[in-house]
Length: 507
Image (tube, rainbow, N blue to C red; front, side, top):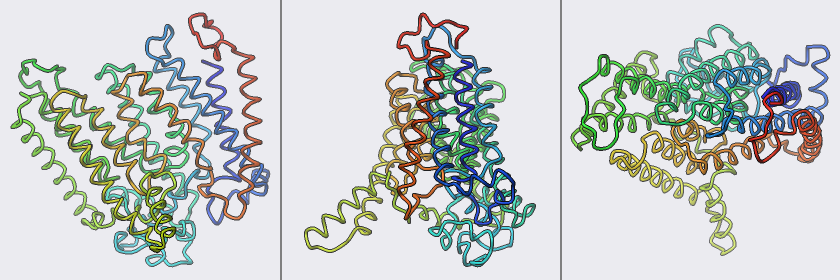
């Protein structure tokens, strides 16, 4: 275990130093004023190679750590060991430039719009703040003129940060990362508790849902607000079902436990607050309602009553946040903003691109945008159909509601035209708490490890300098190979297929 922890920690340190030259640095980069450290910004290829080596070591460390969280293993890692491992892995990532995306600069600019008393859902940073504003300069060109797609609660909290830091972008990034760490802490707190309720090893859930490299890279290092949205969602589920009795199909429901209704309301309110960060959390209210209906008598009438309760709480929270922040409901009309970008990872976008190419080849003209627009609507409809199916099947005890939640959120993410790797965490984290099968574990491991290495730490493709990535990948792979050889020499049992003979003192 110590060897694995050190491998990941060294990887995190490599990634931290590499980020100084290969991260999504602000336009006015404060690193350039720091002796010695500014050297990394002047050698981007070397910095990128260091960052890639660090990414590879962290992914390898995570994969090896998975051997100690495998259900049925003789020596299972404790939650304390996983917490210590997480702490050592994320510590080097706390004070570095943002990685893998420039979204945090959009958070700062859109929050400043709120701080200045303007509507972030009616204008973009360029219009509201001006092109010359330092906060606008850091925003990706794609989002400078688009309204904010984020919930009013997130932008209101962001405006508090803006009121403190002003145009100090470096401090603003660190405070946004601190906000993401609050969400990360909620995930770490809720996951093992939910897993225990659903018969999954808490260590396995923590490994897959919290130590996942997609979480460390994008929610912690990237400071994405998904951390707070997902954190509130899973924390709300844990709070809400805390007093619900454990039942199986056919059991007679027991009387209400003391405080049960209070915890249900608190849980639903917390989930609804998560939806005011990122709207995707609203799906959890539906599956929480199914849990409540199953706890009662499992009749359709119970389902309708539970749905009404969730709708009332969700609406009350939305109204309270909308009027409390003064931002109203403009966020509803801005939800389509992410769809302005077509992701190479989205099956919908790829099919649309293929349809456009076929149209050109057949002499029908380039109708890519129209094809993608149609496929996007179809994607939403399919995802909605999958959600309805799993809601009903969960109500009929065919699936655990948490599994239905994960599958439904995964469908919405995968069928969105702008799908990004970290979006899949909306599915992976709930499933980590409820799906204990080896098939799911293997699939989630492969997808997480592959996507973690797919996005460069700069958040951009090095346009005009694509050769840099190939050189950096090759150099990083060589360093990773050396690190794995060292780990193998220190603990050869880590790399054996059979674990029964693994010496305790070497792990």
